[in-house]
Length: 304
Image (cartoon, rainbow, N blue to C red):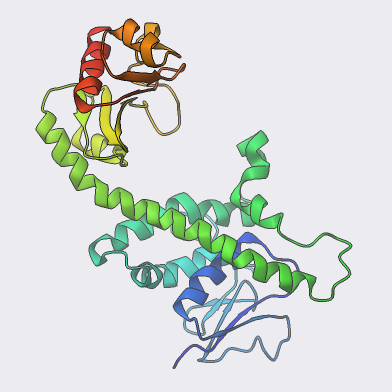
């Protein structure tokens, strides 16, 4: 039967049912989204999907709540929120609806679940303390989405529903951007692997454009590579390679003598005509041609 009704709870909202709504409203755009605690509306029916409310988790009855006891758990024992449950059951169809290539759906489904969905589940269930993020905890996605709730003394009787509707397209942007980035990384991997093979034993990786390269570099075991060059607009860039995505520390820094210099001063320091800029932190440099940037890359290697 066609899904014509999406039902979640009324009142204040949280990231889990808001993000669940992003997935479900995309898959079932003609369905009416209701926010209620009316028991008659929360009754299971073939045309309904009920989530973050309903007192049970039953995929057969299309009810995806997680507040009851016992609460639904992942295979590793970590708790689901409604978002995790909806993603587990509808995430693959959602990715297909976003035109993710069929051969990439499973990998991206898993990656998005690990990197995006699981933290929402843990925070919503109190299985992770927001303080683990330190001072940036107020900038986590649940906190940012929560900041879109109405203020406590908003007199409007529809304040919660109005805020939910306003927050929905914002939440959609975050999900779609994250998935687009994962899909882009999948597209980039073959290009980067080919470039690594072409570079051979060289410590310099040349790419045809700026693109995600870290996962392909790890997959290829290209630990010998120190710098990446690629065109950017009419210029070319030279970048250091971070030791991991969790640090700014690099395999190798650009020469100290280049730090913070531009144009003629940088040309004089490195001896390369066309050198334009080197960041003071020595993680990126810019030149006006491929020839110039490759010269700078070779000099950076020799300076180590």
